[in-house]
Length: 75
Image (cartoon, rainbow, N blue to C red):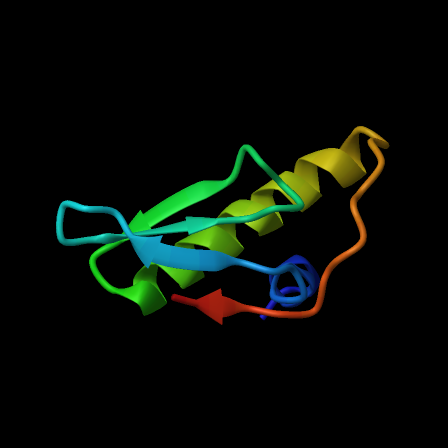
């Protein structure tokens, strides 16, 4: 696991049913990261991938990175 992938798992992700039989993962610290999946676990893993991508871009361009809230929630 890369450093960014490990760091992504420190951020809170909220996973909820999407109403169409799938699930959506949202990341309060990164409002632009919304990930979908067929299962809660898939949505969570896709959200982590989105967080890692955001971190990579933010770090590359020197943008401020939000502090993680160490938690993951599945509802």
